[in-house]
Image (cartoon, rainbow, N blue to C red; front, side, top):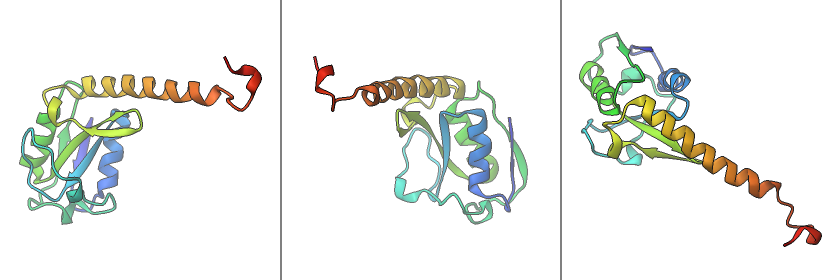
Length: 141
């Protein structure tokens, strides 16, 4: 996939592009310098309606190539080096989003597959609980 970066694009557009390719991952933009293998405080996340032009110091236009074989750390690093954007990749885990800072060496494909597996397991447990009718005493074991 290729993501166009310019000052007029909105964060939510980049997030949407990214999530179309990797539905169990999301990318967040931070108002803090990028640091490899270091989690950034959630309080520093930019609102997703913010334009990229107000989130970065380097105002060049370009395209970022991202593939399933790209590692999390390489994607985060490229956003920072090429466009001055501090981003972190998050992985779906059930109904939560967790930072991937401890698994930055994994590829996006690995992360996405793990997110799928963790979400399937979580969803099935809830579905099973919802299907049980605990109000009907005849079904109690």
